[in-house]
Length: 235
Image (cartoon, rainbow, N blue to C red; front, side, top):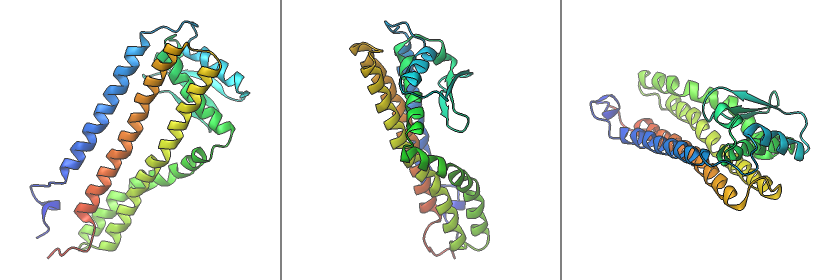
């Protein structure tokens, strides 16, 4: 018998459900936190775009363009084309939430300008992690249908583990960007103390989504190991 990987009951599926629940809760929390503090207008009346432009200029970064993009909380910094892309909810808003998010993306631009090692490592891992995630399941299935070829299965599991490596490398990059952002906002007197606390709550909530993603990926990897790992008797 092949057991539960091909049976009607797979107890490890609870790990998938747990991962989805954790990611869903984190996403809902960051959205609710952003909406709450998006209602709080900053006293300096700067938009997210204006705040980003000021921060970049203040940090001596002149080769990064600030651009609006569609979507909600789709903000990102692209080191390839040197663009800081702010979503509609951030670019035009004068809320403390928008300024906090814009400052966080500026934190990535500062990391790039200063050759922050974890950021460089994350850039290097991206193509490898994407490739590993793409080929992992096909390799595992090929190994299973080739008479449970454990070597192929282990290669597939190892390929998927690269996604977890990427998630783990992402954590210090994101935490550091938020740390830089809050320091810049405080030192530049861009937000009042109470507003800075609100921005910190928004960025802390956003950080939880990366922790949740790493945990969900770990649970998925654990499930693959439980289902396919080891030299178990399949006869």
